[in-house]
Length: 335
Image (tube, rainbow, N blue to C red):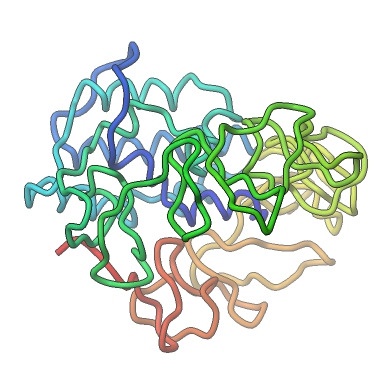
């Protein structure tokens, strides 16, 4: 799995499970319960992202499994700390099904969240209230969660507000930091050709390109040099310092070249799903074998993600957990 796609998982699609937004867009019918909605949301997202990324459907289904990600939303609604809006949920599911891959990525990483997905599960707690996840906060900001528990609901900064205090900017904004050490302020995402400092400063489909003068937001590449996947479009990957189109599941490949997409490896001349727990993940003729729903222990065997298991790195834990005190833990969850 590439660095760019891992980052999506670490943000937990937080904009799909809390907050507020404008009016609903046209969409289909959502399940009657928040549990059913959350299950469908993550299932649909995993399938869609596998296509966007030319990766393994099984790999993403395990990485974005509803069982890992729906607990807070379901419990927040059950406890009255959040409400479920079926109409907005249907519109959110419609967005996941039809939006561009760039738009979906910008929604998930928090740069440009979609309004219906923000409002489908709406937190009811006001600023200053004790919280255990963003799902309970009307502002969708539970500062410190999940790394501290409990935390506090706080309001994100509006456009033009100073943003050098650790609080995030509101939806569609970034913290402008070009003129450090002057006060940084929240500003709209930058368009192509506009100065930037970080990739997250830029509008969907753009990255902050330090290879041009002045440094500015530029389109991601489908070819040419790169240092990591962020240089490339979503369906391309940085391999051997060049943006290339990875091979999708079932496509022919040459073993040892690591040509396949995320969660895939080259076996018998075609790209196939990686191994699962207890199976070998050792290199085969230089070919990497990414584990599905597990991590590769000592470069030889896939070990399932387990809450409470011993760890030394967060990558040994589920994508919704971290390694704290040498044990995999979610740290904070809705009570």
